[in-house]
Length: 300
Image 1: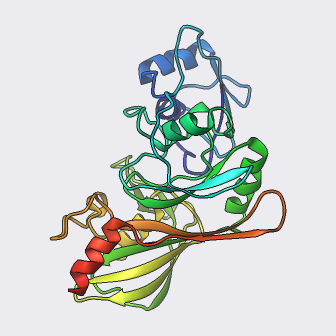
Image 2 (image 1 turned 60 degrees about the vertical axis):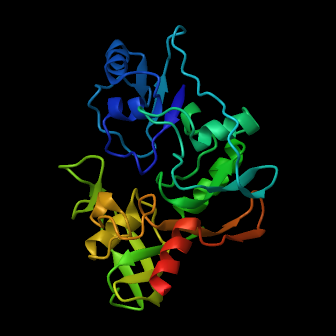
């Protein structure tokens, strides 16, 4: 099995990364495999505590007796766009993009494997088949999927070179000060709460463009354009600005009177170049049920 490290997993421990991406193996088992030489990073043996770097190539010679497969599941997919090399799905809130150490079923990857089998890219490993980029579990919206490795590389280059446009909708707490704003603050892992990210001086460059769509007494409806794509970027930037996303309890919003499934945040717009030419694909979807519910309440 071969995995490649992307920018979202940089600086993770080697054993932590593998335990997340191979949920069928415990962390202690993975540590034993690393120590035994079954795992190599860039063709070299490393310690379990090795800190990963972007584009590291990880090889794992899985023991034959271990079943490291992901179960295909007949879960309906909301396909917004599809051609011979890729598709774009509208991921619902509440669904994980790919399996984790704790959850290995009912993810987008399980659904993709049922419909497409092995006709999905495997650049990011078996447990992230087809996955080019991720959305948090409770963030809904548009996600690109690659059907083969060449398409994966073509689309990944657009993400890396910022030639792809991703826009989000969100409702945030409070009255956002500027009608148009650029949040340019570095983001890294929170040293005290590793499951969270935070603004920190030694973090990675992170940039979000904010545009106010509608104002309410104690909330603001906004559009966000991602220039970079760090883990939890929108949520971290808005929380730092004292305008956390509505119902985002992880980043300090608390629960509002309008009950929804965590953060009211949707990836609603994508603009990219279709593999392998120069045709531009532009996709936009309607607000999801969470947004509609909160906006209805705020407008009443």
